[in-house]
Image 1 (spheres, rainbow, N blue to C red):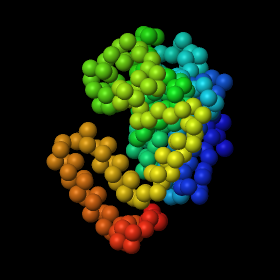
Image 2: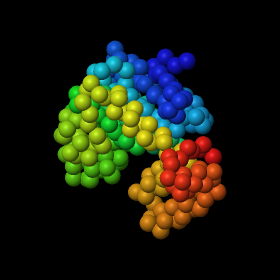
Image 3: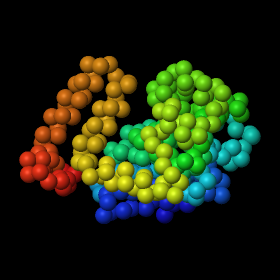
Length: 262
């Protein structure tokens, strides 16, 4: 269906893989890839059988090496460049706001826009071979897919300035110490570990995960009191769900819950 992405479902696990599929170009972003990701996200948003999404890159070399500068061309005007940045903002915000938890499975290089799309995900798991960073300043550019906003919120403003202004390229181990990724796994066990993490998430109620994600995401953008109000509203909503009844019943019966997403 899509030329530059693959959408693979695992219905038995309630999991789907969204794979950036331009390995010959290190899965770099061009207009077509941006559009394909957007269309795939629309499909994922509507699919109630997808409880967890894994985002990764095709091949073992790159998650995504960022923007395909050759595709955009040297004739890009300032107005066109701003338009492209706005498109990236909207796309990555959709990932951030997706109802399902999103895991960035960083299997190789994640530079520039590749790092930025990972920052928009809820979790980042890196293979040992991965390299990650916002490297645009080395090209006399700056991160324009939300990197200047998300990275400081994630690792602090001082470390973010160092990462961005010096175009740092971090190893997986260094990224873990920095708080840029959640987990680093051996290359040979990468897919296995990512899937195990996704399955653990998918064993929870998708309604509870969705509302918890919304509350946590809003916590850094709204006043504390507004965040508490959203939390209380979300807590109340959960009491009207079948999943809440199942969760309590399973706890009392000392068994694993079987959630339905209702």
